[in-house]
Image (cartoon, rainbow, N blue to C red; front, side, top):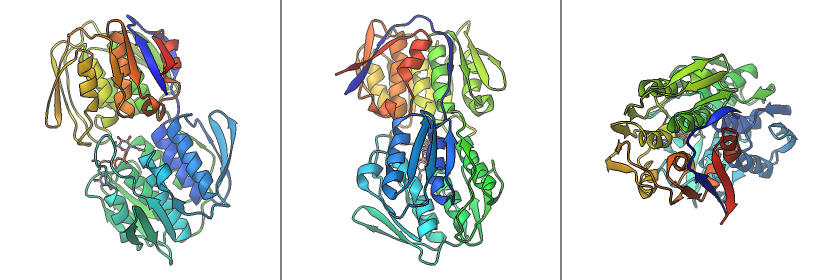
Length: 421
Ligand code: UD1
């Protein structure tokens, strides 16, 4: 198993390119199940989650070819298998994204229940209820969601009790092939959801309300879509993580290949802390802060502050002056990085869903363990400012969503290496 060794690095500098968004690539890949023709996907991040999903699609019968490390052609015409088995789904909850497309195309499918995960229970009840509302009969059998709609799915009004990103994406894909009109009320409007809407729209599906919490989709009544070639949007969470690397070392770094307005919640918070920015249409330079002030964060849906950036900002709070507070609203158990940061000397107290972080304590390098994807990157960030060296173990979590993290950090001047246990 690999681990990362990070040495204290006083300053970072230079520029890096941001990869395609994992959370956009995943629904795009499952949406190819709706396509009647092969298509090319570019700017695909080379991360473990994408490879896991490609493996699942291959098991279902899809054929793909890598043209370059970030570009594939994929053909789903020969897909006949409709079962997503436990061994794949347990590796990646987002495998649930095959539910909508498989059910809409074949009228039946079986998808393993993802089960709990490190950051909380994360149920899929809203996905299931939505499919039922669209006419499917759904049973839970031996840990599998067994869904059937032999006459095809029908348009319906879906009111989500909670805003769910992959839930909205599943319904969008199912509704595109359903008969008639589907309304999604309380839809997610993350940039990744918007990209999926635009892709379906380019494939001829009528979608109104893109970028709002109410979407209206007219389905094709079972006819597969003429999907066009796609370029995955930049990863706003990867970009935010590198901004935090610059911020924790109070350095000037430049990120290229980004969409600055997707990062507004993150850059606004960094500005409040004391940082400046130079922004072009596709790049962003972080300017050091004269003084780094404590801050408050409450995680929420887009365009609010993303839960996927909470752990990285907690690492940043450790070098800010004063007491910062972070309230986690979306996932009940997303504070597992706290005890690992404490092992490095961090002064953090937890009360319910809120963490209070006292900045300014000296951090010391230690052996720490990655517990989930974003928690792992927070430990790497803390390692950049901790005295001596920090070893982050179990980095397979990190490899799920960050492409060549250590190489990109090395390009910014960080002292970091990947080693074997
Ligand atoms: C997606 C992102 C993940 C991000 C999260 C929140 C992908 C692949 N993953 O995850 O990185 O952290 O959005 O921005 O895009 N919920 C239910 N029942 C359901 C579905 C969700 O109760 O059926 C709850 C969840 O437990 C959570 C909230 O709704 O409290 C939001 O979760 P959701 O948006 O669905 O997260 P994911 O789509 O799994």
